[in-house]
Figure 1 (cartoon, rainbow, N blue to C red):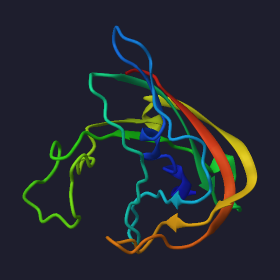
Figure 2 (cartoon, helix red, strand yellow):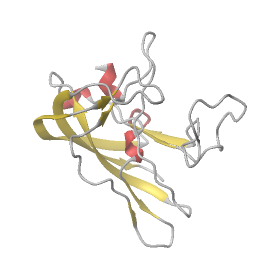
Figure 3 (cartoon, one colour):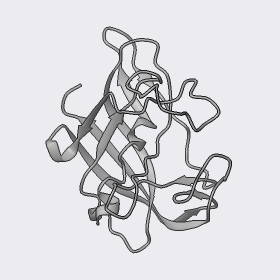
Figure 4 (tube, rainbow, N blue to C red):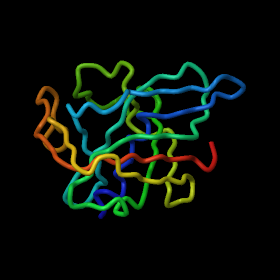
Length: 173
């Protein structure tokens, strides 16, 4: 299922474990999901735009990212085996890797991710390995961010699905 193939596209930036060179381990977590909000992820097709979901955190030194674990809500009619590809994208802070000449459509870009990924790792390229585990076969979120979202419009609808956890490990930093 192509929608799920990149289910984990940018979300991997959400809960990364990292090992700074010659330093202590770094750990970032947003905590356990609370079911209040779900953000959609899908690849671009001829008829649909790409949707990415992520979490932002700022590192104050060079960090080697090697492991990520995160949860997602899959459609009830999907199988874990439908997730065939994982892509992890790393973004720097705006204005790096961004078009600063375009008209900005949001109130501020302060500490926002850049427009383009700085680097990425893809399972189909052999750059990372992943496994997916079923956490809850019947769960959901009370609000979702999928289609039709614009500045100030808010969330769209309640979604039901099954919660999965994906663990990804980079084959090189």
